[in-house]
Image 1 (cartoon, rainbow, N blue to C red):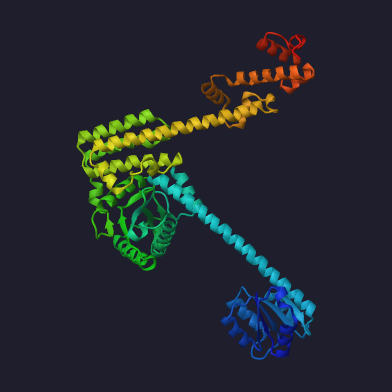
Image 2 (tube, rainbow, N blue to C red; image 1 turned 60 degrees about the vertical axis):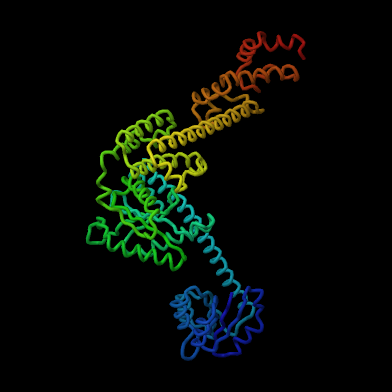
Length: 545
């Protein structure tokens, strides 16, 4: 803490400076001023945390100094000194939120106690503020993940109810509205950025998103994000004005073009790198976002081969004129969509759907541009499922998103078909392995529960509740994996335990019955006889002990 002592009688401030153990009070620097005006000069030149000021001073009183502090340095705490126990002074000090009011002559003990209380109060406030900003940072970090996940689901074609989307937009503080026109800006980072490590690149993408929001915020709502296809995306909606009754304005291309050029220039100025921007045609958010994304990404990949073009707008006529050959691609999105089939693990049906779509494409003799769009449609579905399985798509196909490799895949429908079926098999194999691993884990959990000392009072239902599965489904899994019914396994383990207790302990039959979880000895004896062909007493009478 830094403290400023203000009094027109300099011996007062000098005495405090010399006699108070400032270090023990966590005070680093002590400044002195002989007037309120001199104090203001010191406040402008230094970081001051606490001001101790006399009330009555020429030119400007201590109370007037406090009013200046409240206006210009509201974070500074103030302790008033006065040789007069005037109630009017005290009342004004309370109004100005003074930390304390001390009468002269100043008692050192009282002064130390007052400064210590003020310092402690500031420290507590700073700690609380630090905690608040930590929570705010964590919240923003969590929001970043949630926003990215939502954007990924939308661009990859995941079917999400509109009311759910609007709820999530509100929760994640995304300013866009459903059923309103929007544009998508696809951003390809230049060579300087692509050579960075993942951490540095993430920081740059965050900075680029912030610059975009600052440049566009006056006229547009902006949602920046990262897509699975290694490029950034900005979703923008024109802001409404009070004269429109809440309706979104049409997006002014000329206005947007000027702002995008400014955005590119500021990225170049501040981040020392270039970005290429592709602006899609207007679409209805969010229902058309996936189709626009795939189409725009295809254009972006093609234009990447044309150097010197850093800003492109979609040709609206070209986007709207979809010839009949491209309709074959829509087979992939007709219900049940390819994504739905993959998500529900209907691998054979998904294979059949791909076969029909590729057959139709072959019959229509579609061009490379349409093949490229089909590639993006298929990979969007593959990406979504791969992410759900805990993989990135490049982990399944290392060259999958190498631009040169992509050009080979989209050369013909036949090559796209072969690649798609290979990827489908990889996803199917991963899902099968994960399902087997998951089932093995469940079987192990069940067996540990049954064989535990407290496990003999368990039933199929209580075990199913503990592993969060329906009893019938759990029994089916257990039977398929082990060849033995779960109920039979429970009984077998109880009977094995019964043999041990009968052979190696002197416990009575009713005690063993209770320990095994049976309600009465007669029922236990009946089950034991059914299992071993004799009663528990007969087993003991044979001299097995």
